[in-house]
Length: 159
Image (cartoon, rainbow, N blue to C red; front, side, top):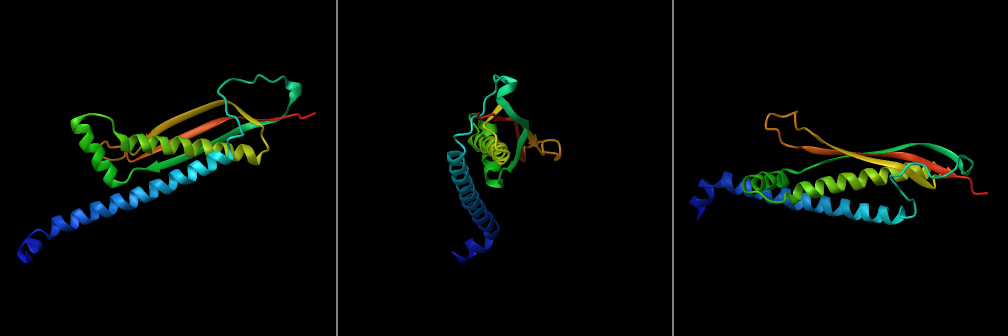
């Protein structure tokens, strides 16, 4: 048994590091999702629409551009799973959660800026997502995802 452990110590250390990465990555992702859900519940009353302004100019008190940006990185364990999934085909759930978290976080940051400006609605909403690190490394793997949410925050005349 001792000879087995000594001869395979590199493999055992690799396995322990993989498991540690999986556990810490899962905990961090669950905490981030909990934070997102809590903040979404707080911001639910601030509507965000993709249509252009439907209010007459006399109803608008103030307007301005608001943006929210988020960059979310994938952990090594999920990247490893994504590489395996790419070999065999199918849904790459690790990238789906990465993009979902980035988009939701960007929208929340945009809404938080609009709320600080006392906005009543965000119109002409747009959301853009891009991969970061795809051309930065030689393996052409996605390292992070950036999501940019922007729109026009409108404060309505309440008279």
